[in-house]
Length: 134
Image 1 (spheres, helix red, strand yellow):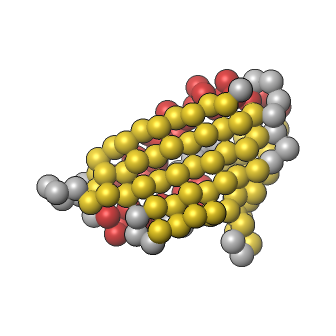
Image 2 (cartoon, rainbow, N blue to C red):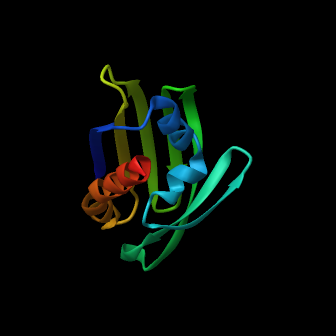
């Protein structure tokens, strides 16, 4: 089963501030509550994701696979239990601030992983929004 979540939200922050956050894989990871820790080695950022379904923390190796500086980033994360793809597109708003389009797709490889992420992806996007509004 595949879980897909798309959300768009408007932020008061200017596009360059939103891009500085979104373009940094470690800052993206810091906004995700189920990421216990992370480390970066070159172009790979490994997230240690707490997945209650398997009752342990799973390393997920992520890397940016597409980037348009200042506007768009797509990353892919792979592990033994899931594959995640995330996309963020930034647009300046005419009235100031930024519109941020987000899309996440999670493919679970074990029963229950998809349900876990389906329940939690909206909350994780809310966490991202709160971090960007700080």
